[in-house]
Length: 315
Picture 1 (cartoon, rainbow, N blue to C red):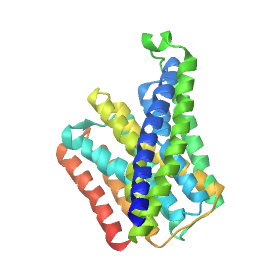
Picture 2 (picture 1 turned 135 degrees about the horizontal axis):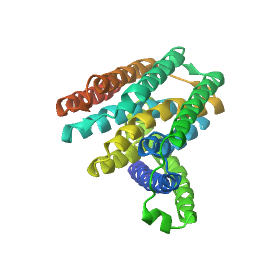
Picture 3 (picture 1 turned 90 degrees about the vertical axis):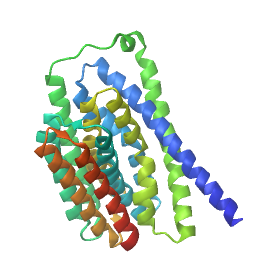
C-alpha cells in the first residue's frame, strides 16, 4: 500500500509539472501575442508578460501552499525558483553559449532584483512575513510594472507579425484562459504529491520546496529561455529570467503573505542569504561584462547547485 501510494504521488508530481509547463506556455503564447498587437517592445514583453506568465506556477503553488498552511513549501518555492532561474537556467544557458546582457537589464532591472532580494531577506529575519510586509512587496511590484508599461508605451511601436493579425484576438484570449486553468490544476497536483513524498521520506518541507517543487514551477522559465536562446532572442531570455525573479519576490511572496501571514522555520534565513549570494553574483557578472561567458556560466551553475547541497545538509 505504501509503495502504491508513493507511485501515485510520483505520478501526481509528474502530471503537475507537465500541466504547469503546458499551461504556462499557452498563457505566454496568448498573452505575448496580445501584447505584440499593442506594439510593446520585446524587452518589455520579456520583463512583464513573459515574466508574469512563466511565474504563474510559482503564484499558484506558493499561494496554494500558504493557504493550506504549508508555509515552508510556500516560501521555499520562491527562494528555490530564483536560485534555479539565476544559477541553473542563466548559468546553464551560458555554459552552452555566451549570453549577451542587454544594457537595460544591467542598468535598470539588475538593481531592482538586488533590492528586492535584500528586502525579502530583511523581512524573513524574524521568521515571519506579515500581511503588511506582503502589501509592501506587492506595492513595489505594481510600481515597477507601471514604470515598465509606461516606458513601453512611450517607446517606438513595433510592427506586428502578419500571422498574429490574421488570427482573431479571441483565440489568444482562449489560450490565456486555458493556460490559467492548467496551471492551477498542475500546482495542486505538484504540491500535494511532493509534500506527501517528502513526509514519507522524512525530508523537510523546506528542502522539497526549494528543490523538487522549485524545479517543477521553474519548468516554464527553463523552456521559455531555451526557446529564446535557440532563436537568438537573447534580450527576451535575459528579461524573462530577471523579470521572473523580481515577480517571484515582490508579487508571489507579496500576494501569499498578504492573503495569509507566513510563519517560517529557521532554515529560511540561511536559504535567503544563499539566494542573496546567487543574486549578487549573477547581477555582478552582468554589470561587469557585456556578456556572460561560458566560464562565468559554469561558476553560476556551480554556486546554484552548491546552494542546494547546503540546504540539503543543514535544512
